Amino acid sequence: MRHKQHSHSFGRRGGARKALIKGLVISLVEHGRISTTLAKAKELKRHVERAVTLGKKADIGSRRLLVSRFGSEKTAAALVNDISPRFKTRAGGYTRIIKAGLRPGDKAPMALIEFVDYKLPEAAKGGETTVKGDAGAVKKAKALAKVRAAHKKNVRAMKSKSRKINRKS
Image (tube, rainbow, N blue to C red; front, side):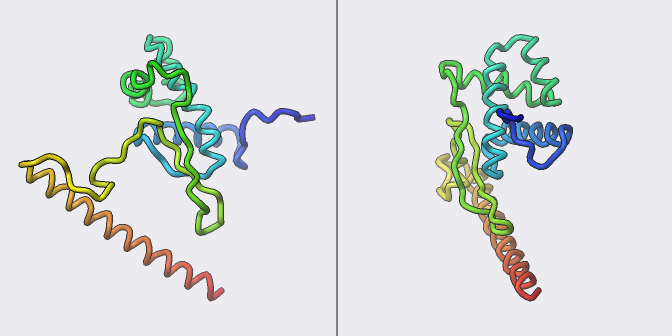
């Protein structure tokens, strides 16, 4: 009898499942916020919370343990030097999961997982940069907004094309 399931299998064998979790943890630490399925986000939350708690120790043993778990010195350094100090006074609950509707292709429930102190960059909010007199920063923000708008337009066109193809068959 299998009374207690300690983790999701995601239809993968052990090695592939570990690689999936490693990749998700590395992405979340690098970007601060990622979009994934709800089941993966819930499983990822367990691993990230434990990693941040381990990073709070900030000793060589915890750093080596993080490197062995996630295979990346860059990720371990970010956890110990950047992320864990931000949550020094917090006892737990370093991440939040925000449900983001259903994926268009297969209707899988999607979610955003982010650190609780995550803040959107100014350019992503659509507002102007607050730096006055720095023409280069303003120009860069406008160019970034233009690239994002073009990318969004291309994605919409691809999705529309895909829907038309799928309807025919």
